[in-house]
Length: 275
Image 1: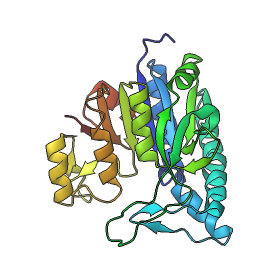
Image 2: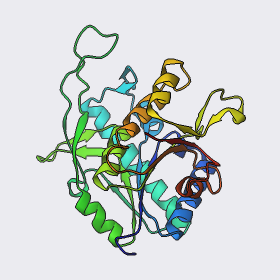
Image 3: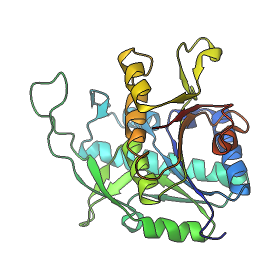
């Protein structure tokens, strides 16, 4: 492929990857894009898998305001779950679909460089919270990613960060995927979720919101329609619109033709985010 081929960055949560139909649909949707000439980068988390492995090791998942506190013992499990179980299984699923998937993690080649997060104020807490072995992303090795894309492989990246000194960190996938999309000047950013869009009423598929701008998104957050883990996804994505990323969408990997539809702007699936 030439360097002129468009780039799609896709974020997949660990909850989505628990479902076999979601994994199969995701692989087929990525294959559709790849066959159309898109260069694809895939970033994944693994929260539920980490929780399950923590429990097997006798550890209790610890979160404050939805953010995981990561002790040194927890970090061992995070690495095993995300860079091990989830990354290997997802890479295998894509290869079975005939895709040139290349499993890796953020510590590979300083792919995702991070620094330790300092203790910070969290809503509802009086004291500063130390999140432990958690990092904030400071740089994406875009030249390395471009090199992999030029080899016509699909990087499948586990969300770990690394410092220049080699310290490994647990990092946030929603924040990181935005930084990857910005660093690559991606043409398309897809945030996959089990729900697959923003709905005014989750029980009524016809209430799907096809497109939302910043002002509308802020109002939907105030109204409680966009809630929970969807809030940071939308807020982070909004920052990309001024950085050259042309199309951003929340979409499901399960629906046949969904990624292709978003890329082509037909509006059949998902919720598109615009300025």
